[in-house]
Image (cartoon, rainbow, N blue to C red; front, side, top):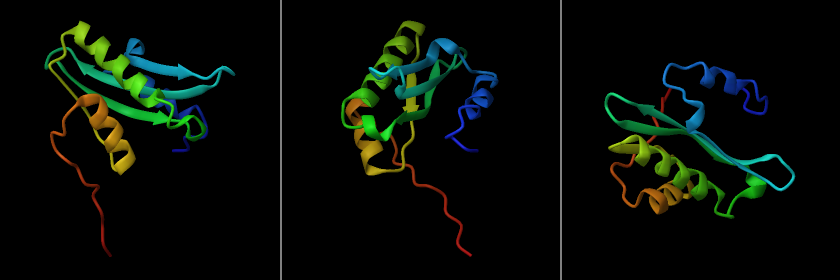
Length: 115
């Protein structure tokens, strides 16, 4: 999938647990997307997962990633969520997530295939 082409997001929007009210976007002064996240929430289990989470490179280190994650947690709290998770595979992402979520439940490592 080519994430430079905005049509990739239409696949996400057609998923069963997708909710438009849990699509969170930080908009730059020029009207472009600066950071965003989608939160997946299961009403039955009261669990949530943040995916995707991204900040456009030229807008990084301005607190926008933290802002969209924090807004997502606020919305989840009003919905009665009990658990919210996010996965990251870089020190920068994990640092951001720790700053918002406050604790590390489990450090996930990417799967690798060796030939």
